[in-house]
Length: 219
Image (cartoon, rainbow, N blue to C red):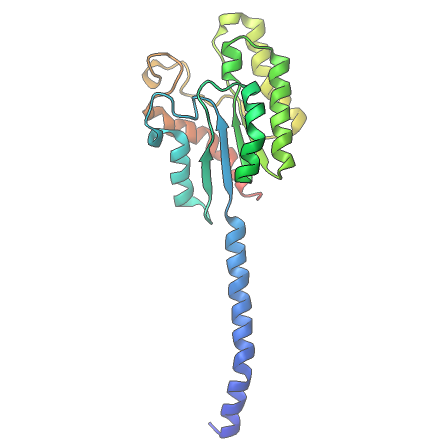
């Protein structure tokens, strides 16, 4: 190599380094863009009532994200045993501002139904929470529930219809029955006949995962 050739080589080296740094920076930015915060906002079903927290489906969700997601997805469990949609409506906005989630999973309503509370009020509360989430630029998934027919067929149907109507009106993805394959099966529920056992938690995650994965791909 001639002296001129060496000078030419080193002359273009800074430019090459700049290009390489740009590419690495772009790749890094793309990786960061894939990271998402998921806020699970539910009642005792998502709060792992009667179980160790690590056995609950939200912890299993985090483990699945760690194995399958591209990026550093984080699942935050803000669920509270006994929570109703009225309580959730009051509690959600401060949590949204604190965690700034990209995706909010709302799993509320069962306690409303078990207490015979007004389906129209429940619908209004769910819509309010969806609006709050959207005001903070978060996407929303709605996990629907079913209840025993204690209050009669008319009420039970009206309760279930709330999730369907809110989903259609607000255009949010809905899982019609979060406890599908678990609810009503004594071998998968605790002594109260309502709360899932630890061995049922993977099924809950399997039920919700397709909706979660689909929304993560949109972020």
